Image 1 (cartoon, rainbow, N blue to C red):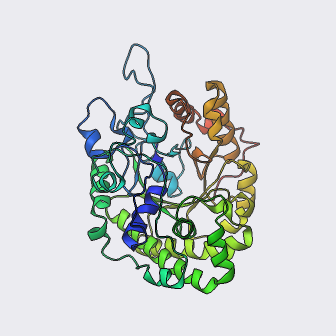
Image 2 (cartoon, rainbow, N blue to C red; image 1 turned 45 degrees about the vertical axis):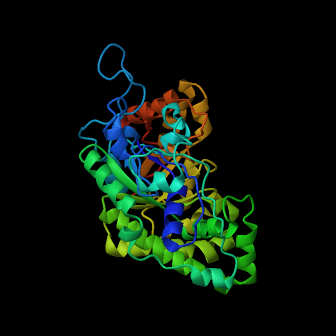
Length: 402
């Protein structure tokens, strides 16, 4: 299982580009170094600082009464399935769908929430041993003018500017080798542009859309800089240990299909193509949150897999994308607020509709803050139990991915 969140990646890139000079609070989980020293907590809750990566903890230790691990939360152990997520992301077949979760443990785990306000962002992000959690990027000097765009630097010397990212990735890869898959993550160019233009979260991205409509040449110039930097940053993560990269278009819901085609897709493709050119064997997953209305436009992106939000039926999505396009998703996060029986049925339904290959089980978005930890464990347990042999009616299942 994996815990990941992209906004911390956005801030890391903004810092390196010289966009953000302000205090920013970003969601993340505990760093590898601190947890490695803390025998009371499983290393399963490791995650990277500032967009480095999230740990693919596909190995889940289920609650057992009277024997073995008594915890209801995930913990790592070596097994023949340690690389199931990586193998499926590369197009190989497996007996079941691997599972991971977007949104790190710090959002809903009580053991981490108590550290919320302990350290300022820069200290947290640049010291992998610290814990952090917060409200998202806040930028005091948003990009609004031609001079602002011209001042944005294309990322260079990533290791010099963000050494804590490489340090964390290397520590996590060492910690998870032979146990799980390490997933790196970056924000997509359009979402990163929206954060930097709006100055933080926004309901309508008005300043961003105004630049798109009034000065598209300027907007394209900004997007080119961001796409090249994001591509290089993704490569840096791979070169320091990430085995899979997910690209988060977290603000996809702000765009209509034509805006996505013109202003977002070309630059997401540029960033992903840079990664694929240098590391062709590294799987890339693209997640357009709220982008179900233009799912067909995502079919021919540079990504190896499309991650689906919960607002599209899985069977329908596979038909719209085509059987040859692998997918990730898309259980409704709200299901985790319900009974275990509902969680189990939602997992089996998702697996059934996705078919027997080309699918990684995930939520349609992040874990909600009020989610019980036991519900996360129940989802992972249910996923591991939902083998294709036990779930699929071979006559009714969608055609396998070629």
